[in-house]
Length: 237
Image (cartoon, rainbow, N blue to C red; front, side, top):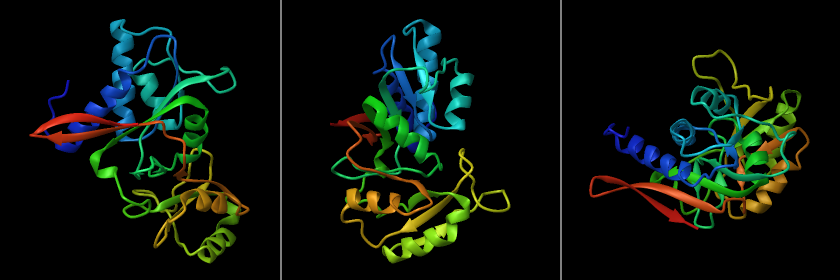
């Protein structure tokens, strides 16, 4: 299976497999979004097809994870139909030393936050390039906004010291539209010194649905790294 020699892809595959290996029969699983989470869904499907696992139900965090779950044979359910969720496995765009995250590169952070926060255990799967000393140092902070509120929200974010920019589509004329039908503003902050405070301040702006700061949510970080030319997985808990 893991024959591709691209180091980043190798790391993502290994960490996705390591996360899928933590899932046990009978679990309700939050299925994350993004390239590393996609490998986890693939390996989860393979474990189901081989008979290693049974009675798994997944709750997707995006249209992407919904499609992948169906492709790899992972049965799906919804938050309306379950009383609890055992585990959520999702990627991140940045991880700081306190296990706080920036997510939302795939514009799915609202659904991701709902699912990831409800799980008994939230496991983050990343490659080593996502580890940072301080959030916001390599990645802009995504903010999902109701379309009618774009202009006042941009003004409010500027008052908080951010430099906001509407996310535009790739190979699509116009802005990115989320699975909820909203728009995404990517914000540059010179320094995010208090992620918890900024998370609340942004979400208190009328018209903001959710932002990509995940503070105090992650339980375990699985990091894919290359050592001596071989991919390994390191755990931060």
